[in-house]
Length: 271
Image 1 (spheres, rainbow, N blue to C red):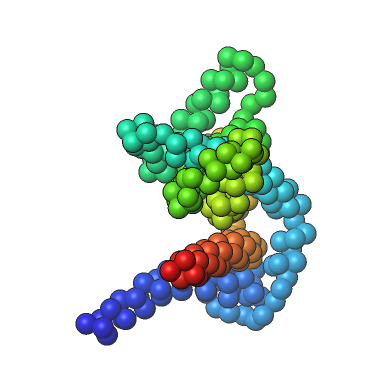
Image 2: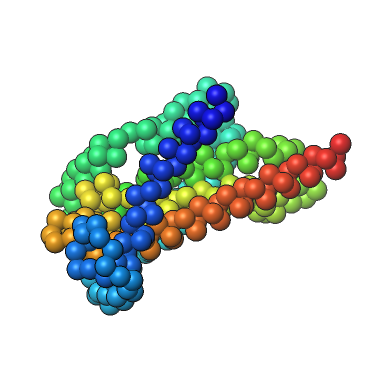
C-alpha cells in the first residue's frame, strides 16, 4: 500500500512538473523554433531578445501596474469587508460568505463576458473612454477581492475579541484601537491576501482578455504570440513568469510556517 501511494504521488508530480521542467530547459535551447524538441545547444539569446522587445516590456509594465493597483485596492477593500463580515450575526454572515465565494466558483469566462458587457454599457450610457486600463483594474479588483477576504477572516477569528474592547476601555479611540491592536494581529493574513491578489492578477488571462480593449497584458501578449510563428521567446517569458510566481508562493509558505511556529510557541508558553 505504501509503495502504491509513493508511485501515485511520484506520477502526480511528474505530470505536474515535467512539462515545466522541459519548458525551462528549452528556454535555453539554441534554435529558432520553440516547438523543436531537439536540444541544439545552450544559449541566453532568447532572454536577451525578451528584454529588448519593446512590446513585451510595455505589456510587462501594464501587467505590473494593474497587479500592484488591484492588489493594493483589493487588500484594503477586502480587509474592511472581512472586519465587517466577522462582526455580523450568524445568518447574515452565511449569506455574505456565499456571496463572497461566488466569484471564486463562477467560471472565469462568465465573469469576463458579464464584466465586458457591464463596461460597454457604462461607456455607452455615461460616455468616456472604451475598455482599457481602468476596466482591467476594476475587473482584477473584483476577482481578487474574495481571496483577500478569505485570507483575513481566519486571523480575525483567531484573535481575542476582547482586545479591541479593552483598548477602547483604556481610552483609545475606535479607529486608533483598530490600527494599534487589530491590524497587527491580522497583518499576516493581509500580507498573504495581498500576495495572492498580486499573483492572480499577473496570471489572469480569460477575464483580462474580455475587459482589456486595446491594452495588452503579458498573458494576452503571450496568447497573441502563439497565434503566429511560435518563437523561443515564449519559453523564456514563461520561465520568467514561473520563477516570479514560484518566489511569491515560497514567500507565502515561509510566512505561514513562521506564523504556525509562533502560534505553537505561544500556546506552549501559555500552558
